[in-house]
Length: 312
Ligand code: AMP
Image 1 (cartoon, rainbow, N blue to C red):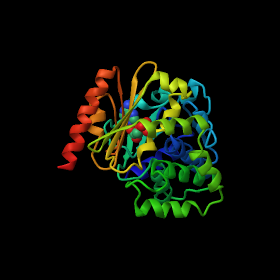
Image 2 (tube, rainbow, N blue to C red; image 1 turned 120 degrees about the vertical axis):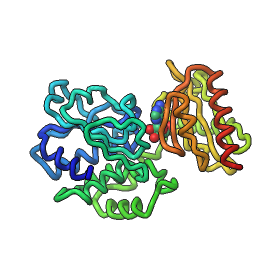
Image 3 (cartoon, helix red, strand yellow; image 1 turned 90 degrees about the horizontal axis):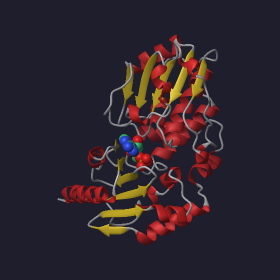
């Protein structure tokens, strides 16, 4: 139903602008730009743009385009991988004529004229590949396959997270039949600068572990010492995932105007805690924003309770 409606809208519009969430990750960019390549290969006469801020560590995947406000006139806007309007990169999305939401997060904010939301999908990139398979007469190419594969790899932690299904693996198997350099793609996603590697060392030395919950606070002084930018902190949060005994973990990262909270879990559902503190996300990977270190203690108390309930 939504797939048909989405293809129909794509056919109707000559200009299509694709957005995704702020602070992009490989799935945000992979689904956004993968969809652009798919549309361009299938409907070469259409103008298709990708917008939002660039993250220097991910420009190897794709670079964004600068477009004028006027381009939005009579344009179709498709927003990938973004649960709520507040997280859409480039707020001009609302200038479009019609808005489509394609996402795999829980549908907390059902925005858009057409919505296709599937929280059982490992990634939005997986959904875009499903769109290619189920829509009529679309053309996949090497560039789209590279981006979609990169997005799936990123959001499944290299097929490690429980969100990985047989469908995920089947799609991945099909995507690698296209011609792109997988090793280069992995290097781009996983190689880190030396300061990140050293910061990971600090985290491994300093995390706390109490009853299955691990907490790490990265205050301004330590982030400055290791020269870590707010965007780069995304490359740190997986660091504790392999420590035995950790069921859930939380990073508090002091930024200029907020303390960013990154939550991860191997069982306890933590997006309820994220939602309580101006955030949201997936049951096992979510984020929030707080504004004082006292509030951080409240988050820790709530998480302790969540982990305790899970263990009962
Ligand atoms: P991150 O720690 O930024 O990788 O985020 C993990 C997950 O939580 C992602 O799926 C994000 O979409 C979601 N998320 C992070 N921060 C927020 C927020 N402030 N509001 C809603 N969802 C969020």
